[in-house]
Length: 396
Image 1 (cartoon, one colour):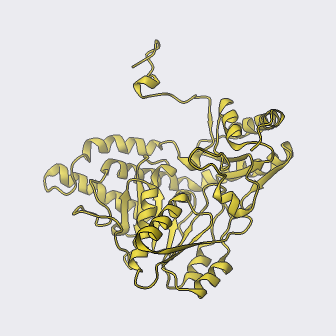
Image 2 (tube, rainbow, N blue to C red; image 1 turned 90 degrees about the vertical axis):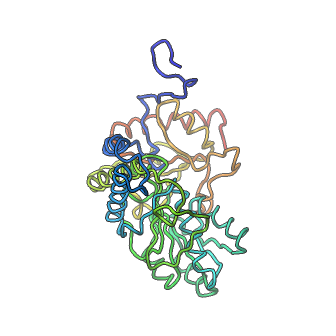
């Protein structure tokens, strides 16, 4: 269905974003990278067949799938046969955590994870406790969001653990976790790393037994997750599988999307240093200017050990959801860790665990195309938005 101008309408299932909007929510997903788009369109014609089949189209699809595994593995420090494509980053997290726990079930049913992990880890922990009679315990973080490694060490010394789960970087505040120290503290205990927020922006440190990533975070297609499982890891499939090419998952692989994800990752890493330098300068400007322009603001997260493109701050006396909505009306797409929803009815567990201000939280995460002009426009608009909300009593 189209409107008078011939453009698709909501009734037809397609709407268009405001082209004037400055998209500052790349941590939730980057726009599709041109390299991914090009490869995806070509692979739709060449990689549509079942890669298990022995006929020509099937062999072509298998070659493309193997190529995608090889490219992603080489870029993330893994072997091709350690790479599995899943339906999402969340699915990869669930498989990684639960598979390692099942592999260690005779040693320990105890999961240790940072208090600021993605909700996917918390969901896996609840499932583990309900279905496998396991236990799970959060490990406290410091004010900047970094894991308290001394606390982790004490917990590991007190009782045997099955798995330690720690994210590479926190997607809400950008803080990088001390993975080298975590791996050293864990010793023989396998470490699961949720790298969904970090891949494409930082290197994945060694020492993990399993890791997860999500293609749409680096400009690949949505609906493609990556599970990495070391050949040396004791990992067991937590869900039913089948006789597909990859024993870690079930179902027909999305070969074109996997190949497009690999192409996007390759392109993003080729330009990573240049993009990161530009993003760091813009983030530093936001971290400096926001407290100067707006009263009663707390910039949260580590100032230095952080992702290059993420900056988060909280405004006292302002509701986070109202702040995001008003900024969106002015053409700024941002996120909030303090916007209560019908499903949660509470602020971000990350901000609470860090012990920082949870009111009026705003997260800016710059895409590879974000410009200095976008940031300057945001900084010019923010004081008036906050002042207006405070005057109207839009308080969390």
